[in-house]
Image 1 (cartoon, rainbow, N blue to C red):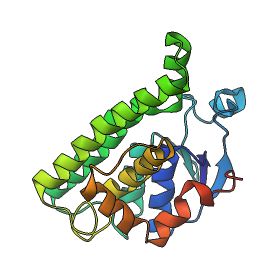
Image 2: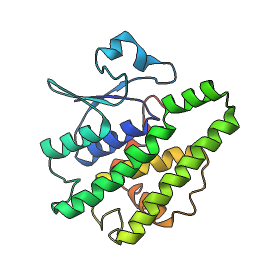
Image 3: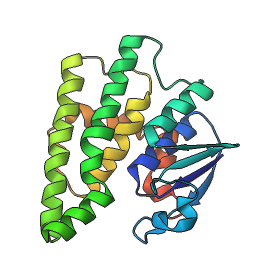
Image 4: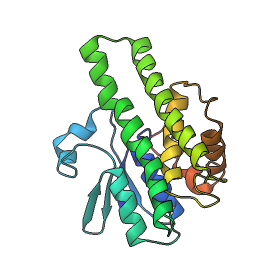
Length: 212
C-alpha cells in the first residue's frame, strides 16, 4: 500500500492511525501542501480532487479519509475499528461526522487561505476564526460524549474505534493553534488514553518523515 500524505494533514493522520492499528504496512508518499504540491499536474493524476490523503491498495485508489477508513474496516476487519451493534456504529459515525463535517472543513488550509486573502485577515484574525470554530465543534463533541454516556477509556467504552481516529488529529490541530481545550475534559481524557497507544503515537505529525 501507498499513502499520499502530509504530516500536518489531520485527514491523513486519521488514516495513518487506522493503518497502524490494523498492522497494515504502507509506503508514505509525501505531498507538501504549503508548497502547493497537491495542485501539481502529477498529483492531480493521482487524485483529481487535489487533496490528501490518497490510499493506493494494489490496483485500487481511494480518496476522502472517511471513505478510506470505512474501506480499511471492510477489507481488513481485524482488529475492528467499528463495533458490531448498528446503534453503536451510528454513535461512532456521528462523532466522526462532528470532526470531519462540522470542524475540519472550516479550519483546513484551503479555508484559512481563502479567508485571509478574501477578507484581508492578519494572523490574529485567522487565529480568532480558527479558535471560534474549534470551540464550537469541541463543545458538540464534549456534550455528545457526556449526554450519551457511552465513553470509557475511549469514545466508545474501552475499545478503540474510528471516532478515536478522528478525534485525536483534531486535538493536535487545536493544540497547534493554542486553543483552550480545558472545557472539554472528556474529550481530552480520551485523547490522552489514545496517545498512550503505539498506533496513535507513531501516526502523530512529529513522527512523520516530512516533519523535519
